[in-house]
Length: 245
Image (cartoon, rainbow, N blue to C red; front, side, top):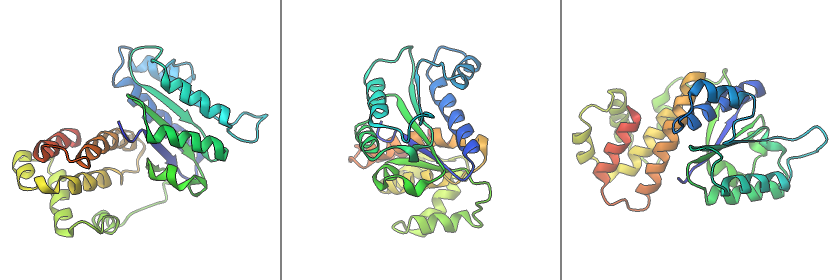
């Protein structure tokens, strides 16, 4: 899994925190024998064994390199219970430069079945190299995009706008006739995945953001394969449509 980092950002720290917990609960529940309600209870109480919670303590000025070492050690070990693991870093802008560099190494060489969810009210204070390696989800309720299609075209200037239109129609149709679409656009598999990630990344409501984050993580995994010259681009698009649906 390549992209394990998720940054939840916005002006409302409480909203960031709630959204991060929802994403973590959904993620660790997806491959656990425990009941989701029990997992939610343990996560909220910060007692879930497969979750490491990191924040700046009252007697510290920053999240230190020692905290980053705890994360590295936690992710290098086998999970306490069977299933996926998560690290939650609250107010990641409080990380020292050394701690941030240590986390960057984890993001570059991620472990299997784990995510690092970070919250911040100061997205610009984070290292650009960290931001570029993470999925970013904005929580600001006030942010509105009047024309999502135009926004995606502006964001993905390297992709033919006609193909963006066709791909968005295909996604909105529920990926109808996916086999035909995949054969027709096999050579455009990477572009299609970038469009799909952009489409799901526009969701801003609380419930949709949780669903979106998990879909984006899976789509990003497939995109990483595509960029490594995945042997069958047709099946790659079909695999993506199973996630999108």
